[in-house]
Structures are given as structure tokens and as C-alpha cells.
Length: 360
Ligand code: SAM
Image (cartoon, rainbow, N blue to C red; front, side, top):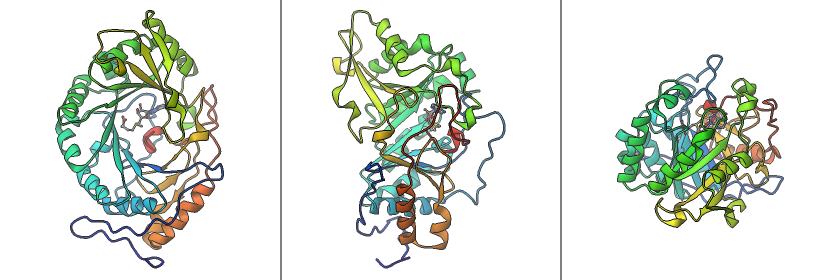
């Protein structure tokens, strides 16, 4: 394929992909093979730690990439060795006709896995169509199992709907759904073990996320940060009869940001191997040295680090140049990927962007 030759998306939605150009390796020798794609910067929930009350501007309709543009960009990433894509947001399910995008991405030869992060509100209606379109794996965010507290932290969310959505997803064949919980002292710290049990009984994988000071720390209340060590200790102390043991492979390069722990010696929660939980510890035990990912915003900005505001406008390159120019631009951006984040425990050092604008 010659320079500036566009990757074609035909009437059937098939995407023609040229040969692999090379791998994406940054100057820290980290292999980038995972792309998170935000498909919208809007959300039907307004989680208090995620969305500032004011000051977040949303992209206009013209700014947002079309599905065909997203597919072309993803195809460019596959030329550079990206094999896994996660759709996120905002809330990805509020983007109209999301399953059509999934079908387009499925047509790209290099893509081995498509995952989706969602708050689950629309899963009761959408689980079957997402499965049918080709979403392989689901993460659902649930910060509490108390309906009133859930309504408070999401500013209006409906826990019963989300739990019904998870059931709907399991019913159409999703196994090992990850239940993502941001651990917030004073809000859900007393519930972490109950969330684990709820997950284990349903073949879900509970994961606890340390709060990160996005949006210039505007939403970050330092005393509410639960460290990975505290999360582990809190869960361990709820199961005094058990041994909490680190899974050996959980820090392998490319294994993802969560470290997993097994809770051995408790009964009544399903098969023994289910009793495990993950911790995503960006703040106190960061994993920048094994970072394997980059992020594409809904308007086509490539963010090579969650914690920095640097971004490269791939939409402009796509619209003005061609796919080969996009590939060159991605390679140059990854070469400049930051070595690590500068999040500080007191809530400074993070980016101006809010999580809703990039998708976690
Ligand atoms: N709406 C989808 C969802 O709820 O999963 C995808 C986007 S959401 C921004 C992705 C994840 O980021 C959610 O699990 C959310 O709880 C988490 N998140 C948002 N703000 C965060 C913060 N400041 N620190 C840590 N995690 C955060």
C-alpha cells in the first residue's frame, strides 16, 4: 500500500488492512499492544470523583470521530502491532449504534480482542447485541452495593439496573466479568469484602482501583485515598481464617495494571479459584514500567499517558493526510511516551483532563 493510501471501509463494513509495519516500542522498551478507545466524552452517570460539577467542556458532534474514522485509526494501530482494543468513554453505551462500531472493528484482521468498560446502566437492553456484535469481555463499574449510596456517588444512578445488566450479560455468555470499584475511604471501605463475596458468588472478578487525582486534583480528597496495601489489609481482615496470597504472574509485562490476590481457605463462594481480587494501584505501587497501552479520545487525540495532558491530534492527520501519515504520527508520539506519571498522594501532579474525557 502506497503512502497516503486510505484504508478502505467498504459498504459491508469490511476494513482492508495492510501488512504489519512494525511493533510499537517506546524508549523505555515498553511494547505497546493495547489501545483504549473513548467513543464519547458523555456519560449517563456523573460519578463525584470522575466528573467535575463544572468546567468540563464536551466535544461537539463535528469533533467526534465517526465509526469509520475510528475503524481506520484502529486499523493503523494494528499495523503497528496493537492487538487488543477496549471501548470506553464517557459511557460507551450511550453512543448510538455502538454495536455497529464493534462489528467494524471485528472486521480488522489484526484485532484479537475487543473489550468494553461500562457503568452497566444500559446493559439490560444492550448485552445481547454487544455480544452478538463481537465484544469479547466486559468490565462493569460498581462502587457500592447500597442502592442509596450508589445513587449518591453516581449522582442519580440505579444500582438495580446495573445488577440486572450484569445478569443479562452473564445470561448471553459473558464469563469472568470484571467488577471495578474505586476504593474510597469513608464511602465504601467497609464494603470491600462484601463486594468480593457478591462477585465471587456470581463468577465476577472484583477489582479495586486507587483514586487518581485527575482534573488538576479538583475532585480528589486526599484523606479518602485508600492505598493498595490498605485495600488488601481491609479484605484480609474480613476473612481472618483465610490466607491472602499474591498470584505470581500478575506483574508480567502485558498482564494489565491489576495485581491479583487469592483468598485461600474460605468456603461457600463458589469454586475455590474464584476467590481472588485485583488491585489497580496507580498511586502507591505504580506500574508505569510495564505500561503497554495508549489512549484515543473521542475526538481523535492520542494520549500516550493517562496522567499527562500531552496529546497528538490523529483526527487532523487522518482527515488531511492518509493512513500512512497516521502510522508515522503514532510512532512518533509513542517515541515520546512519558516514562511515568507524576500523580502525587496529596492530589497534585495529575493532568488537567478529567477521567470522563479519556476513559480510565
Ligand atoms: N463509563 C465507563 C465505566 O463506568 O466504566 C467507562 C469510563 S470510566 C471513566 C472508567 C473507570 O474509571 C471507571 O471504573 C471509573 O470508576 C474509573 N474512574 C473514574 N475517575 C477515577 C479516578 N479519579 N480515579 C480512579 N478511577 C477513576
